[in-house]
Length: 233
Image 1 (spheres, one colour):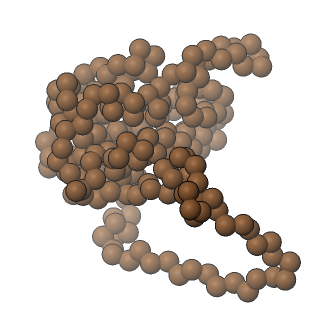
Image 2 (cartoon, rainbow, N blue to C red):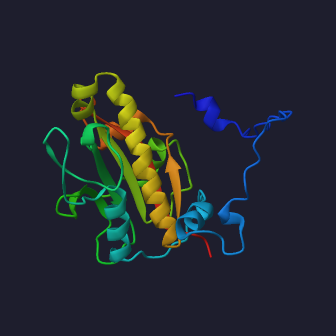
Image 3 (cartoon, one colour):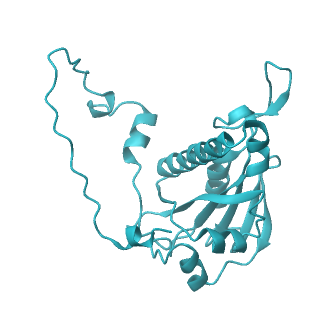
């Protein structure tokens, strides 16, 4: 678990000082620094920050719908070069296998009871999985992080090992991690554009979390989590 790393307050990394070579290519000023602040995508990327203190406000159901759809929703059928038909998604996936599953904890979402849900992307719906865990149990699973206390969403990205590793072997695990990162970044950018804050969480007690999620770890494991909620006023 490397718990000492989470306990230390040290986070300063020295910036390397390099002597430029004579043939260095100086790049033009990025558009995001210009007067018009560049494109909407550039502005959204520039505004993304990790939020560690969420405001206790309700979130609307349409915003929740948009977040999940652009994170891991479906985009119709595509025909691969080998003739296979796959459901497209808003992110890349090795072999177009899309092995992730989203388990979502909802708190203060208008029109949705608080609880734990599984996102079913084909029909764009949430399937109830049970009540929220007690705060102390959730804190224990997330290494006692206090930052997610008032988040409206806590999205767990679960990787299906069989689907990718059956095709790619051990390298498939790398592809699962990459895909979880793509999905998390989608969620962060859409949330940022909607005026929300996010916190990506890779530090958790795997055994406790997988057990709470009801996962058979021979076939699927929790890879990543993202908290989403309102920025403090």
